Image (spheres, rainbow, N blue to C red):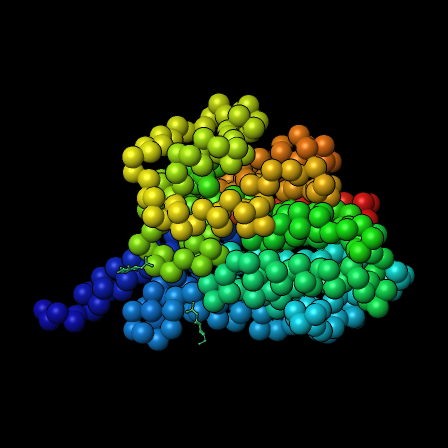
Length: 414
Ligand SMILES: *[C@@H]1O[C@H](CO)[C@@H](O)[C@H](O)[C@H]1NC(C)=O
Ligand SMILES: *[C@@H]1O[C@H](CO)[C@@H](O)[C@H](O)[C@H]1NC(C)=O
């Protein structure tokens, strides 16, 4: 019998199919909402990751650029809002920063507004890939949404993305009449890295003189990332690899790109173990801002123990990044005084490595006397609220439900 007999070919293909299924299958722990949709998304992450790695090996393009292009292809190749009869959509510049304005056609002006910063780890995604999401917000909450195309890291590291967001937001607040927006009814918001930017811009605008600009009425933080000093908070330890929607490694890479650190793979071991900050910082007020004692008791009780071995600190790295990671415009949880921040809506997902960033920020805001509406969503994971494609079948039902609640909240509060 020859090597290429039917039987061998059958075995060959069975092995390939089994191998591919094994590669694509990600176990999702019990309790996750809509596990099969999540598995589909995670499988596509794996394919994108593999294509990126191959492309980088072949010297064709960086894995990040491949990821960006594939995300654009999957999510932003068609701008649905431009043909939406319920919306008037306009691309323009706010002091040089590109924005897209979504205005419901029947809205009475001056209307409430939301300045929105998209997620994507500061390194990818765009106004286009968020088009379905921002259209939905505008229509459902009946508000004018301004989606900001801030520049991305690592080509444009901190503070460039943050500065772009500040510039665009100030432009709206100072020229609100021109856009039909009531400056006293403006919220700023974002998800994930966009939630980081929304919290940071909220802090930045809080120091603007009252006479110069009217302050945002509300900050909307959807599973935000808010600190880069402690990568071993309970949520990082409990949820790393859980479902894999956002892993600790991915989050560390995002932060490193946002800092503008090159040589990413060389350094992430230090971040993994919190060897990227000194014991001086850990014992300072900055360390206190990530103290697990600020978290709800049930989380403190279940927290896995993480031991900090200070002798392994990378002092050179720590010195290089310290100013940045303690800067509250980079990591909003590092702010000393939060009392002037606007009221906050914070949504945290149960199975998210970032859950405790949001919980800590909520607690710190409350302690500073700021009103906080905290929405902790059980069974949810990072990214569950944003559409994962134009097709309805690939939407998470839980995400649509929570998004609807957010829209009702915005309607009530603005
Ligand atoms: C992505 O591609 C652009 C254009 O070719 C290039 O300027 C940029 O450096 C690339 N970025 C990364 C992270 O590879
Ligand atoms: C980057 O990595 C290379 C080799 O891995 C090393 O020689 C170089 O010093 C590193 N640069 C920085 C800025 O860490």
